[in-house]
Amino acid sequence: MVKKWKIIIDKEASNALRHAYTYIKEDSLQNAEKVRKEILSSIKMLSKDPERHARDKYRIDNDGSYRAYEVYKYRITYHVGVSEIRIIRIRHTKMNPIEY
Image (cartoon, rainbow, N blue to C red; front, top):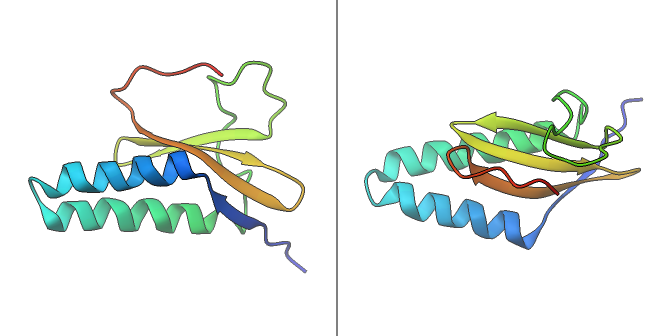
């Protein structure tokens, strides 16, 4: 049986996605919908294989449980726990990276 992790999106990440959607929507509603849909779809796929993406290179002392990937120039950072995947951050790649 394939294990499925529960996905939790932190409030900070949710707010960042909402902000990105609002920003993109100023120029194109269609593109805003496309980006949001693709990001949420990629997050949903994590529940089947959370280790599909590389370790987060900006995480200090990363034991491999922090991972990150990009969708449409947005970097999604997440933590793989025992039974859940927590989406920590969604930010545009042009923003300065934050080591944490």
